[in-house]
Image 1: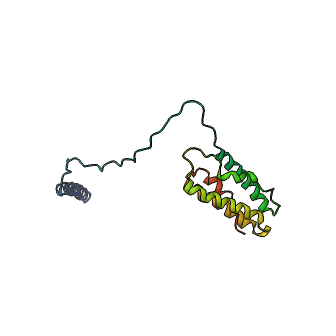
Image 2: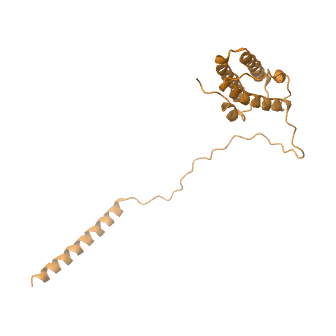
Image 3: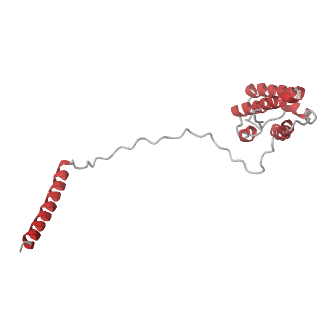
Length: 172
């Protein structure tokens, strides 16, 4: 007989617990204000700056400029010179063709004489200094030569910068 009242008490306790939880949910729901249905203003879209007009040219691609070809030769020279300097070898003969750097025809719109003229003079000066430097000083002079390229390409025509930065020699 004592088992029956305990079962009734358990049933009543469970029922009260369920009612109490249900009441709290209703009270909580009554406290929370209903959501407003007013439209939320979205921030204005950021407009990109107007792009420069693009000209589509049909036909053959324009020829590579004299300056671009010269700079490719300068890159090949710097790459082989880097290896020679790193190994303590003698330099190849002075590359006279690089003296045309000042007068080489550039790709239209890619050369600002106010900037380029200072860099081409500096590069030719460092090239001359590289050939006059004693062997132990060549790595530093070579790195200055490469930094001159990077400085110029940092102000205009940045495409070759990745390749230029790989040309430098590690500090000793």
